[in-house]
Amino acid sequence: MACADQPWSLILVIILLLHVITSSSKPDSEILLKFKYSLGKNSRLSTWNTSTSPCSGDGTNWIGILCEKGTIWGLQLENMGLTGAMDLNSLKELPFLRTLSFMHNNFEGPLPSIKELRALKSVYLTNNKFSGDIQANAFDGMLSLKKVHLAHNRFTGLIPLSLTILPRLLELRLEGNKFEGAIPDFQQDGLKVMNVSNNVLEGQIPEGLSKMDASSFSGNSDLCGPPLGLCPSSQKLSVGTIVLLVIVVAAALAAIAAVFVILRRGNPTPQLQEAPGSLHVHKEVTFTDADNMEHGSPREHSSKGRRAGVDISEG
Ligand SMILES: *[C@@H]1O[C@H](CO)[C@@H](O)[C@H](O)[C@H]1NC(C)=O
Ligand SMILES: *[C@@H]1O[C@H](CO)[C@@H](O)[C@H](O)[C@H]1NC(C)=O
Image (tube, rainbow, N blue to C red; front, side):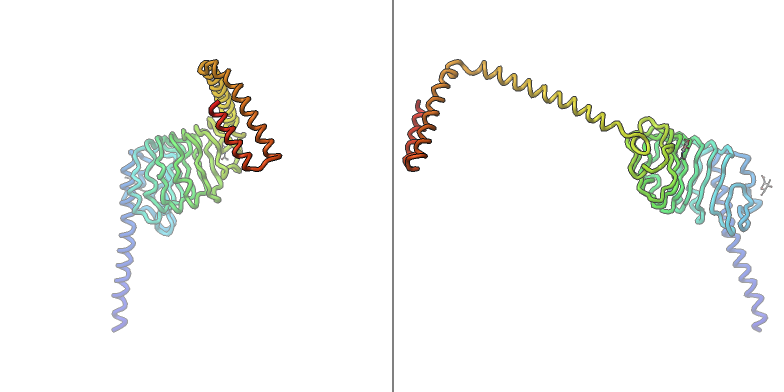
């Protein structure tokens, strides 16, 4: 009886397996087709159709899909003339997706919301027509992200700060855009490749990047500091300080001159004539005081001093 049961359980297992396989591969194709329709029409993606599943083992039936053991770990859609507003959100449902490359296409508009795909390890968007500012928090929470290639697009504004706190960042290529402002402080020890050449960056290169190749920074309007030449900012500052000093000194001199003029005009001559008299009295007092110190008692001295003081105030 046990022998008769076994075939049934085997068939059950096979049905279950088939169900798992079909249910896991069908969503993948659905997910990818949804993504495909967010792109402009393009004959290069004709193999993305329901006649096959995207992966077969480590191999792939659909162009540009990277598979391993039947699961999709990457999209590599390069040099295909792709356009449109890619719907990265639809790719969220591919749990093993780790890399995206859309290099050398015609994508335009703002940077897609990459951080929706938190587990990504690499993003390659070099040589497209993406444009506009990138939000400072565009890469927030991407703890696995190692390679970010955004070179040769039309990005503007500041280099997004969230790049500076990616714990695993190895490569950052931003060359050939219109990034402006200062380079933020990258502190990742692992950062091996960094290229921000041919942008409109300015200011001092952060110390943490001073050991990078100088060619990583070339072609910017006003970058300075190692590995490029020393910053002229300190010289500019000292020129500014000198100018400021000259102004302050001139103002002080003018103020002193003004005080003299006011004093000369304001003090009538009688006072000037009185002055020598009072000085004379004062001299006499100090003389008496000195005598008392040598010969007399402190009491005598103090009483005489008081009298002398009264004399001065009355005379
Ligand atoms: C669907 O993909 C297969 C390859 O997987 C291809 O041979 C076929 O031409 C495609 N069908 C269409 C309608 O493009
Ligand atoms: C950086 O990119 C420029 C092109 O913009 C290239 O000439 C240079 O060799 C690159 N440097 C590094 C270190 O990658």
